[in-house]
Length: 485
Image (tube, rainbow, N blue to C red; front, top):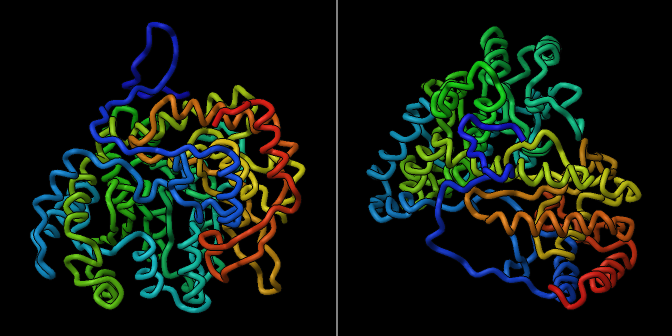
């Protein structure tokens, strides 16, 4: 595990992450017996999204809206100005965005995909092509709904599961130049995602972002930055990019945003609150988008958000620049990744942001990709542990015009680490149960759809097991663990 300049060393020699916070409010968790978990996962159609939290022990589905809020955020919510228009709460959020992101023109929205809707409707026309380092599910859906398509321009080795490349989220500049030479004026904007969610929360370097911005300026094309996980990306830049080892996270984050014409984010991620925003310093781009906010979201000074959440966002954005806050999840993720690697469990390396990503095709090589190995692994892991992760593979992909699955580049089980939520003993429980499942991996089979929505099917689709493998897994669990939960 790479050491932060502020790593605390233990006399024992152990290398473990140390929490820089204390817990003052707790929430009861549930761990039902495995037989009840089998009933639950069947009822949910083997889709972890459709489980109830009473059926879940550790909820590692996502970090979106599940991060722990600070005492300062909760206190700020009490000063909210409940005005429909011209709210003082919005002014405080506006100042925080300008302080942290350096953008003065703000369009508030209720969450990140709402920002993507505004951006896509404003700029994407049928036949347009949007170059990006890698797509996100909702980004792709909004672009396609408006008639556009994406072209992913990561380096060839970005999709390697095991790697020592510290910045697998970098955009390949040669590929970008080739795409712009081919598409010409058919490109409304270039998008960079910090950090690339679907390939393991992998960051890009600031040097790469500068290069992308330079090419964008040469072609007079706006550069759009998805800043939902920008704090973690800035932290990795400080940790891994030699030039910035002695630069503050706040200054790195500010320069990242300076490279972009438009920055948008989900505050459910970046500021441990709810809501989102689009921000820019370009009046022409702002004016092109702002009429859609009252149509889809709410007035320009609340954008569909509760003003209490706006107050929490303002505080949370400043906290995102605090290394002890933003470094907590990456340090826990790196700890788990290292432990699993030593046990032979196939995981994405180097450890990224957002979560620990398990390579489902390496874990279940006997399950064909057409039977959704990442979805099967997510269901199997919930079954034997009560831990709810998320499938990030072909279930999260789409079908082509002939109805065939567009197979995902990678099949991953994502175990998300919301900021300051889990304890180290809980992380060790995840390690233990995942290790056990790896020893019984031959028992896990595939899935097939029985109910499939036409768009974003991973949210609501239902599947069934292709054999009686869930029952065999339960039997093996009882044989090894007795009456343990």
